[in-house]
Amino acid sequence: MQVIVCMKQTVDLQQIRIKRETREPVLEGLPMVFGDMDKNALEEAVRIKEKHNARVTVLSVGTPKLKEGILEALAMGADEACIVVDPSCDGSSPASSALTLSGAIKKIGSFNIILIGEGSGDNYSGQVGSRLAEILNVPLITYVRELSIEPDNVTASRDIEAAIEKVRTKTPLIVSVTSEINKPRRAALTQILRASRKPLNIWTLADLGIDVEAIKSANSAIQIISNLAPQQERKGIIFEGDLDESVEKLVGALRKEGALP
Amino acid sequence: MKGGILVFSEISVGAFELLTKGRELSKRLNFELSALAFAKKDMNIHSYFEYGAPKVFIVPDDTSGPPNADRCTHALYKIAKENGPDIVLIRSTRLGKEVAGKLAQRLQAGCITDATSCRVTGSELVAERYALGGNTISTEIIKSKKKVIAVMPGAFEAQPSPVQGKSELLDLGEVPKRVELVERKNKVGESVSIESAETLVCVGKGLSAQQDLYIANDLCAALKGELGCTRALSSDYHWISEDRMVGISGKKCKPKLHVSIGISGQIQHTVGILSSKLIIAINKDKEAPIFKIADYGIVGDLYKIVPKLTRKIAPASN
Image (cartoon, rainbow over all chains, first blue to last red; front, side, top):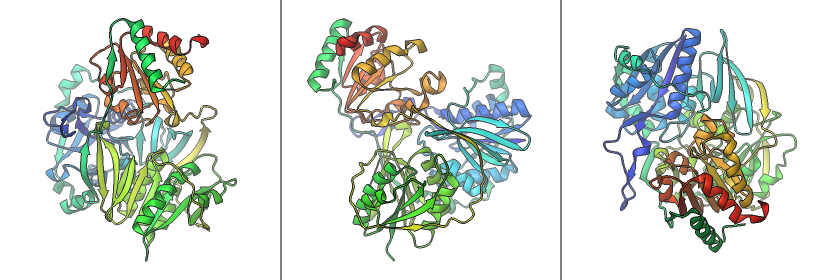
């Protein structure tokens, strides 16, 4: 069985600073990390492998920093990595990401299951799984929090806010997972050491037979005109020291604000 | 032929919000407005006319829960495909987001999900959404001819504006069934919608055991508020149901009063409470980022502070 996991590297969102004067985010020099739900997807793939003898290929589109970053995914249990590193992929939209991923998936060849997080760590648009399912013309099961693989069938439990659905379909398919599905493992030191010896394929768009113009055209559907921190005007009155006094002052302030029932 | 705007939500109140926005956009663009409804037997189509839908496409739907995503996608595609509406507004629920991505791919459309606002500027359709994990708000124009926007629930207030509308039965034909539904359990009773709470109390990892949740619940009761939580308490610890998870992958709330207890203030969580009118933070770490977005705060042990606060607010009930 072949399992492909799509992951996205972003800057470490916890470490973003905002320039006070311009409200612009400072992204230079930040470490790159995979999104939390991307790791849930990878963990699920590795669990499938442990149970069903599958081969896990991790797939990612990104910057040259991926060459190093992808080792983490290999250390967590993927057998092989395919990364697409191409300057034309910079600043890609969900539409172009899906296009690039579909090209890479075709190059990998056949697959039984594609796993993906329900949303990326940074933009959480949730579009890529849907778009990929359309391009590859395979079933999609979204928001999965429990997955079981049988010889012919895949059964999943999915959370759609108002209901929990149990659904079934046949492979090949795409599954998007929520953070509830599992708790991703930390890679063991021995695995980290072994990761760099696992196969790593580095591809450009040309290797995938994707026309740069097609990527440009997909990206041109959305034009970002600004990306700034929201304006926050908060009072910032923080009480410290004696707790009784602090609580007293807080309740007094809340009453003044008319915020208490 | 005139352009058009098509709105879709699996629940009526969502459609009314989108119709209200759709009226504004269609007036600006001189577009025709229409809606798609997956109608259960008891659906009152006139309520759509009440909110200003001149035309409603109806697909009869006898499923007990939300309609099937592929059927929704197919219906919207069918209406939008030929000379039909250029702009499709969808409620950004889990179903809505799945449908938005699929529809956009089929229409070769630019798509924005979880939009917090949208407007027409000149002849451009502009929408805003959170980006970089909630650190920023991205303002984006959809340039493609067909445009799909999934709008956050509650982003617009529904306002009635009755019209003489007409409805049309939409024949979907055969939609290939790619995924078989084995069982659906509607979440009964506790269908909380903390998004609309006027007072919201959120707890995080500062709480060290599940049995201590009463501390937050007591404060909730005193404030007549709803309880929310961070991702850790819901997804990792399973102490609190996912319906109450607040943040970029959870609920986005805009209460009048928000009390944050034992939450450090990672952006993935705080993006869900940034629109609160008043933010109160209680945390033992003076340097915690939550204090940077707080109106009032107390630095100290939540186990001591919160019970004191509860007693002070509602002395009678304790």
